[in-house]
Amino acid sequence: MNFKIAVIPGDGIGIEVTAQAVKVLKTVGEKFGHVFEMTEADAGGCAIDKHGEPLPAQTLEVCKNSDSVLLGAVGGPKWDTLPGSQRPEQALLGLRKGLGLFANLRPAVLHQALKDASPLKPEIIGDGLDIMVVRELTGGIYFGDRGRTEDAAFDTMKYSVGEIERITRVAFEIAMKRNKNIVSVDKANILENSRLWREVVEKVAKEYPGVQVSHMYVDNAAMQLVRNPKQFDVIVTGNMFGDILSDEASMITGSIGMLPSASLGAGKLGMYEPVHGSAPDIAGQDKANPIATIISVAMMLRYSFNLTQEADVIEKAVSSVLDKGYRTGDIMSEGMQLAGTAAMGQLIIDEIQD
Image 1 (tube, rainbow, N blue to C red):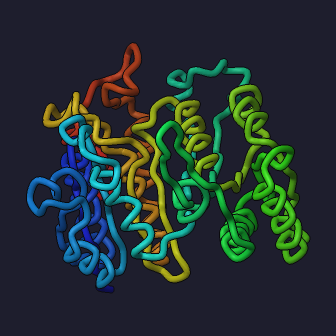
Image 2 (image 1 turned 180 degrees about the horizontal axis):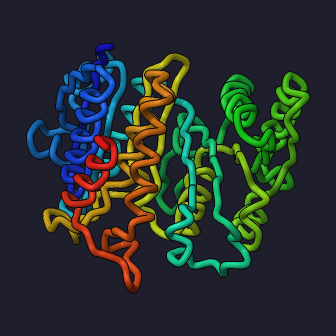
């Protein structure tokens, strides 16, 4: 089968980790007889330098004409002094909006081999963790009306029934394929839009009688993630709450360098990227962990291309390399063998080929 993929390396370590993910894709293509036609495009700080804007029209057009998008990372201190509307991060918002990507899936998985890397006690994490955070991506406070007066500023959090319904259905469909347990996170004791959120979740829940649903205030959810994370299977929540909670969930698994993400819309087109940023302090030093980006590729194969077997092969290869004791610096522990970005990518490729 043939698939068109837009590749946006971006800035900092995005360039390095994306290069390894592309090699993994090519290896999978050779092994299973697929052709992945990859077109590189600019977005983020590099696009500002080359084109004067974070998301050039030609980049968005390449993405729209592709079957999926692979993104590295954007941003860095070089562009921190730019006005908010011109910063590299605007590329992310523009891509999500322009491609109609409203659902962000962030799995937080603690591999058995990395239990020692988690900041939580062994008795709390038990035999590992597997949490899926489903975050609404194109609504809420990040996209609401905003502005400034002489001595104040405001940002508006707003959600429509339709926006809540569609993200909730995504979460329920995922829960049906997992442990059929959903925790909806809001702030319904204070916020009116959260009260609407809770009402709509309850309404959609009636369509999925086999799924257990509960509600949790966001402050309690943040506490419960470190107190008893194993109670969670699927978490569904709004844009800002999801942004914060998914980062918290990522850190209890040991390293943000391990966490992939998928941004999906109504069709099969998705954007896949690691949760981590551009990490300019280690860029170009062969220190970055490529695993999050490589697992993001596995998510691409599973969710956009329906290539489940191929996705499983990548994930098993990652687990096998970790089980053999290889580590990048961010997950390094005593007695393990240090591997750089390129070496880790090659180790995973070798496992896939075997």
